[in-house]
Length: 180
Image 1 (cartoon, rainbow, N blue to C red):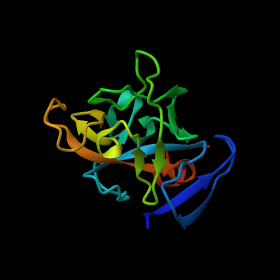
Image 2 (cartoon, rainbow, N blue to C red):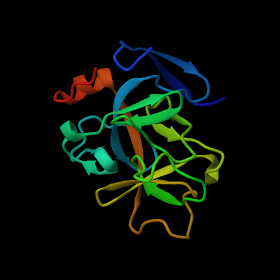
Image 3 (tube, rainbow, N blue to C red):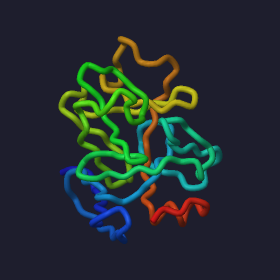
C-alpha cells in the first residue's frame, strides 16, 4: 500500500482547483500554480508559521521573502517556472533547481506531489529512482546519485524537502502572494 496522495485537478493554470484524498501512487497537480517552501530534512511536512521560513525563488535561489518566491506549475508530470521547463541529462550528479541555461535536458519527468504536499522528481535513471534536494547557502540543488554519493556533491549542502503550497492556499497562508 502506498502513501496517501492529494490530487488537485484543473484544466488550465487559471481554472479553479478542487482537492480530494485517496490511496494510490503519487499523483500530479495538473496546471495549478504553486510555490515551494524549503523544509529542513527529508520529511516533507510544512510547518506553518515557522520562523525564517525560506521559499524557492527564481534560479533556485532561496529567499525569506515569500513575495519573491518563484511560481511553479506541474503539468503532465513536468515542472515549469516562468514558462521554462525544469530538466536534466543522464550522468549529471547534481544541478541547481532551475531551468537549464543550456537548453532543455532529456530528462523532464516525472514530477509529482505526494499526499503530504511533498514535491518528488522520479526517474529510473536517478540512483534510488528519485532526486533528492539540498540547500547550499542560498542555492537549492537537485541531487541525482542518492543520499550517500561520495563523488562530488556540493560541500555543506543540507538535505531539504520542497513542500508545495498550491495557489489557492498560498494566497491565504502567505497573504502577500496572489496565485490564480
